[in-house]
Length: 285
Image (cartoon, rainbow, N blue to C red; front, top):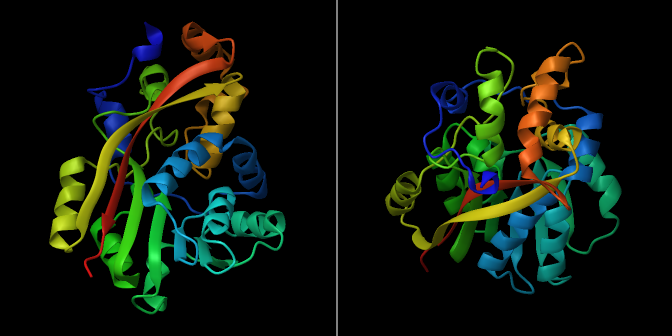
């Protein structure tokens, strides 16, 4: 059945786009930030599962790296309550501004503009939990990032993250990649730094972090139409996703994409699967 298709052995062009490559952090815009806030239900769903794995407790201090427009951070702040604290870091100014506007006066929640490269500014052993929801696959030096997070954790503190992996790319890649493979330079289809289970296990062992849960999870999303899917992709990739299907001159290409997506349509919309690695680990006491 079409709904069970996935890309176990991605084509060369798809994986070429998944190799380390420059990512344009200047490609974001207010429109994309607002589009992300409207369409980031998929990220919110797997973020909630990550928070469930981390089992946040009232009174804990939490760091959210790459908070986006802050929907998940607000939920995490509610879990730790007014006795706890949550620092939400985001490098993209449009998303920081939107998060601040939409978050009101949530007790214990504060925002700072920054990302994985700015963690050296924070003092060690100050957080009970640090999480990165669909962030790690955008970072080139992932081992260093995890080492930086370890420094920030209190003894017994937890790290949790979700990330794309190369051996099970999202179902949409199998559908769209054949259409875009011969269009070099058209943008990304896959985040540039996808991770594997052996990599993660090695990082955790090297950094003396005690592995908790490490699992491949399948998520099912429904999109009303191709435009909904493209908005989610463009905003989730902050302007780095391939724009070929959004260009008005590519009417035929767009029609072919719609034709290929039609077998996946259900009552709720176009049904597509995503596959993410969810990981948790703990710093020893």
